[in-house]
Image (cartoon, rainbow, N blue to C red; front, top):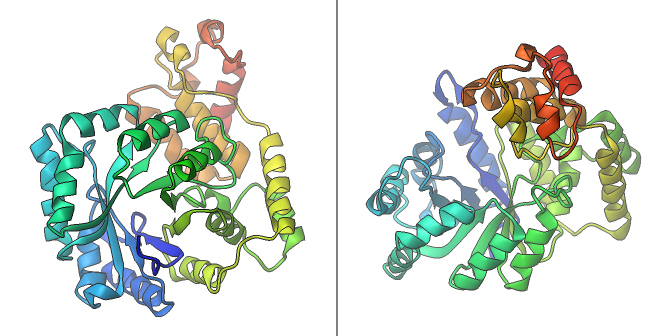
Length: 369
């Protein structure tokens, strides 16, 4: 694995927008500022609308090919019906970017089910062949599942050179994400790690006021986002930490954080732990998204989606993000908003977590509708 990869990576999924598309001029400014700062890793994907084309104009056409590292991903969930569809994604990505080759190529968003499809379609062998042809320099995958599934994949595929994991201080002990345990599995297999979502999609850049207070008392001049980036970058085995930067202010803060980077001290780690304790103590709805409630609800209400959005307000104090999430997880999934609840109680009888579902649906309606 090349040792010159910059510790901060540019995740190009959330590029600045103009109208219905990507603002190319602003994207060029971001790319230029990133390159001037002597960071060099850019991450995109076949499934990021317009991102690969933007990279061609903002990066590939304007900088020498050997001056940066470019990663993209094969996403079988983006409409692939056959293995040939998946194989063509590499060719399409090469055409869109004009890059000639990819320094890092990832099987995108592996979980228990998608990993099985990648294997059944022979895609590991196919992309290893493309690596031999020089179109891919390093092959790995991004991952969203349990540490047990990760261990199984890495055991069956030692040819994977690296793994991209969701790691941030809020998810470190989260029983759904299990960041710490997944990191431990990757290290057990001696794999380099690329970190995604270190700021949890931006939520940790402006956390709940009680959490923000912990960081401010420890260092009044450090942003909450810088704490999140440094936490991820301090972990053993991390090659680069991706940040989805959509404006120059965000990029500048990240560059300042990672310039001449040194790992967190014990005192700083203690601050992270205190912040996590405060975060974990915040009131939230302990929904595990099993959706047993949805199976018995006569009104077809989007219960788990409503609770996920409500928790975004309760844990991160971000109502704007919560309302977008509310729509995406409820109406876009074909379910109804919680104000349609008739309070029959069938959901609470089915809930293994014994959640006061009716009361919390009322709260979600009051806050988000």
